[in-house]
Image 1 (tube, rainbow, N blue to C red):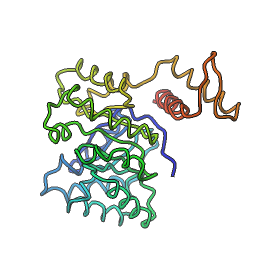
Image 2 (cartoon, rainbow, N blue to C red):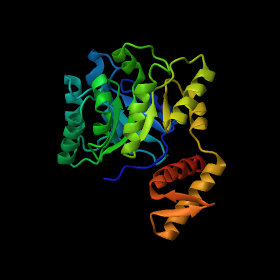
Image 3 (cartoon, rainbow, N blue to C red):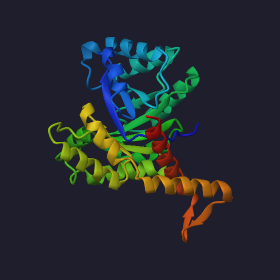
Length: 285
């Protein structure tokens, strides 16, 4: 399976318990909309949220460029096992699943195998938010061809590390996740900025994440989306350069080309295709 290349500048959660909010989330401008079954749902409501979420994915989905994901519970826990069982039995499973609190590659490999047995093409997104997961991030990134992206779960990670949930204390952990994702050519997405009353802080945090290597960032409210999309959208010059590099490689049919006197090797192509995918998403919206 090929990892999909598409814009992942921003994402937002919508609760599985509130299916009426799903259309609003899809229309808010985020590149990714994730239906929530995990932390945002109380234990007593897990079964109802699961039924609601799977009913949403049973309906035909518009070809609107928005990536749809379902965040399940940890597969090391009962609710996660029940989520997986329901998904395996679904005739129209979600196109992608977000796996929280991943600790080892085995968790991902097992779900990959179960999806394969069920004949589901469902993709996977994994969250690194535990100390054990951080230690194993490189192996996790490489363990399944179903994985499209890694997410940095900063809130839980800060709690595990017993550090302040701020940029500098979490810089090491963030860098480890970026390194792991980049090594496997996966997209990597940063944790949401939690202060809704600080739009400047949201933009600054997005810029820091972008400069570190993240391709997108989460949001906790639709009003954060526009700034995230702006920060993670390449400039017109960068888009034009990406199109030129792709064109030159296609014409050259080789592992490297020279553009404006600079040697460019084939590994940069994935990033160029991602830039073009963002440009296409902008022009279609």
